[in-house]
Figure 1 (spheres, rainbow, N blue to C red):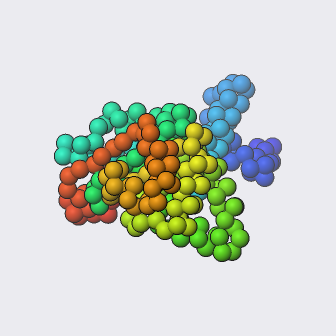
Figure 2: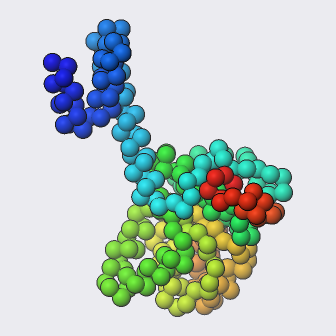
Figure 3: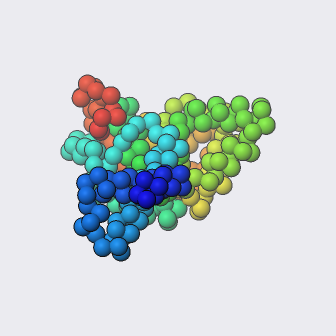
Amino acid sequence: MNTSTLDKLRKMKFFGMFHAFKSSMETGKTNDYTADELLAHLVEAEWDDRQNRRIERTILYAKFRYKAAIEDVHYHADRTIDRNQVMRLADCTFIDRFENLLITGSTGIGKSYVASAIGHQACILGYRVLYTSTPKLFAKLKMAKADGSYIKEIAKLERQQLLIMDDFGIQPFDAQSRAALMEIIEDRHGKTSLIITSQLPVNKWFEVIGEKTIADAILDRIVHDAHRIELKGESMRRKRGVEPENSL
């Protein structure tokens, strides 16, 4: 009977229950439970398994650059990064309030890692997240314009509760990219959240975006009431002599 039950659990894809019941039988612990305790144990195992698989799928879909964790962020004094601020952001209530986060600092200092760590935390808490390199995003949107998939790509971005745009401002925006940026920001404003990382200070973004009227409109929506982290200090890659995905 137990073998048949295990087979049915596996076929119904109740993998949490399957492994918990199999483990209990192998260790002889089934006799330690009352009927309701055993049922509660199996349901809890199934719940945990499904939650873990959901988180794994969400993180995979987000396509993070780094495997990052809030616990691994380093708070060196010369980085001017406030632990309390990061921990407040890690609860992700800023996403519920449709607020943005702007992370600036020189190359190699850990902007992408901090953004990814907060993004991973958002995935764990059940938010839809997408990480993208800004230059690659707009190159992809240009190709989408050419092959007719632009609306589909824009809709995909709009569905994300948190969009992380890394390396913003590495190159100036041309007219097509500027129009696409305006569309993305307008679609998301007051509905979802952004994390933007940039080597440039925020007061230089106007020049990179170009076209005064559009730049004003974009920055008004991005910057107003946004949280800011301004990282300083020596490049963490040079300082540690390792790739930044280990911890920053």
